[in-house]
Image 1 (cartoon, rainbow, N blue to C red):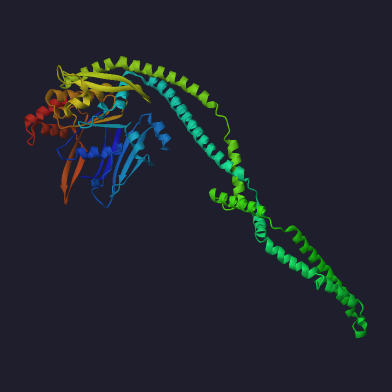
Image 2 (image 1 turned 90 degrees about the vertical axis):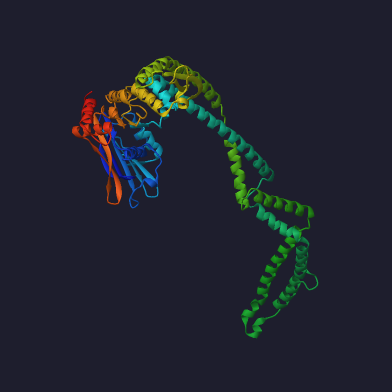
Length: 554
């Protein structure tokens, strides 16, 4: 239940701290006193969009915080799934709004996004107004009501377990098929690229060797001519270098250099012999090159084509050099080997999915049968509950149609009714006025009080459009509901207010340069006076006080 609400810097509320008792709480106040402001602030904790216009003092942020005692056990899983500390005794929810309109949300001091905030808070409190009858038009909420009424919890749990398995396997199978398709497309692309490289068969170091040979073959005639000239200069019969050296060496060997007083000069002939050996080696090397080099246009054309093909491949495959091209070639061959794996498990998964589909259909049909059998009883009890609330001609029906399976089964549910005699039944959202649908909603929530296990329900002027005995019966019904949950009612009717077990009054004061709303718990005497004022208007006389006492004790 909602045990405490703190509001700071929100619209007309400068600062308020409200302690709520259990049971049936009525909230009254003059029009414009701030009753709706308090509920609007509380709605922020349900995930309603924040608005910077509600920040009264632009120098500081707005804070709305609620303490809920004895939270339902179902919230433990949600909290743990979102790394929120779980406390069996209470949950504290806070929303902060900056002057720019940006907001932050916290559950037990853990930051959460709005979807998590909403999921948690909507299991703690339900705010219902005459303009917010979502439960009557939302198929999912309608199914929850009917399932709670006929106690379908185990049937629904059994169905949802199979549904989760079915969806999980179906998604996995879809992913595998998509992956297989992608892999097949990738395989075809790899084969295409590999075929191109298979024709080329690149080898590391080949390009450098080919480019050297290409340079030689491109200039073979000139190189051969130059080598021939050099060879003739070395070996020529008329003035060749080697022949001249041989002649010089013979002459030097015939001279006695000791006559010159320099014995070491006798080594000149030997030194010249060494030069002859070096020149002979050079001449032989030149001769070897002359034998190797030849003008070969066919070989030149072949090498030029090969070099061009390698450069084209570098550009096509977007690699910087021949080494990377070879690495790509090897990598593609490895990838192709990896992609030749077998996917025979798809057939087995298909068989398993069909088995799950049959089991799911059986459980969905059981759930549908239970809903169908309980729908008539649900409709009859709603009519019984609603007729004393000024709806004597109400006819109510739960229409069930089978549709696409989801996490709640295969049923599409529509609440249909007629408020007047001889009118056909239509969806409630299309025919009910605000007052009628509010009373219908009160009847439904009264019926569901024992089964929905919602800790707190707040009715915001649900009694609009009624008075007298009907208003008294509505108050009695809310009071009866409060035996199973905390019920609050914002009301302008004394007949409803008199049924409250606790009474809060909202009022506003003009303080210096601004108007501020306040709220406080009334004591018994103040409560009599408040209800007397609601009965008589501005002037509270003895008759009004007696009437108020009568209402409070009736």
